[in-house]
Image (tube, rainbow, N blue to C red; front, top):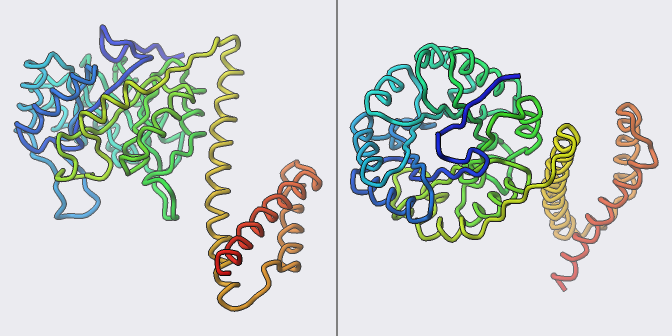
Length: 354
């Protein structure tokens, strides 16, 4: 079993907040954000110095000069400071600037070669390293990246869940698929597990809900994006909170801890909770498609109930269910209920038209 140290000495690694702007844009912005983070009662400031962007031409960070601003914030406000690194050169620059910790982003975690280069650059260093999940929900890839950093001698380690990329319409920027971080926790129960609700949600209005959901699932803390003036932020403007909103959020969150009589049983229950949440998300998406179908039927004067289609769906599902070890009766009941709700929602469209 791996043996981890607290991420930062003197800070509870099971009740952890990290906050700050997506990007370090200017000295003034970093210092103002640092003041807001401290006023919210948070002791760790985050800010991106080098920003890996999906498309060229987007703001890609101020580079090494911004490390000086982070160091100034650390000195003036007594905060620990962390930033993202993606190359050994980034690590060297961060260490020279006396940065307290670094995180490895989702794109980097996806590439084992890049992670190994980072691990080699970290050998012999006692620094906090946070590893974000890869872009895809691949727990082996995520745990493998953590193992590479651990094998380099790093013991101040944490995992950060920031959701997974999707090509489907979703209420989230990066859907959480909670079962993936829960499985990581089952494999590495002593590893601190943090949630990044800003990147999961992609919208500031749902950051609070995602944050509480993560804490309810047993996460050890949160990494939240906070900007003095989010509307003019040079990156990820829609998902950043103001310092005032950050403080309101932190004050509203409820940390729930249940007696861990059996560690394995607790982990299984967390997996069930995560899977149930995912089922609800999928059902919501399915009902959205059902409403679109209802609108099409209404436009073309088609009957709401297409009995042959439902029988076809039910027969296919029943066959798959038996192959997966579930009874036909169970799946028949589930799909009948889903079909009934789909019909109800389509009939609501009929009523609205009238």
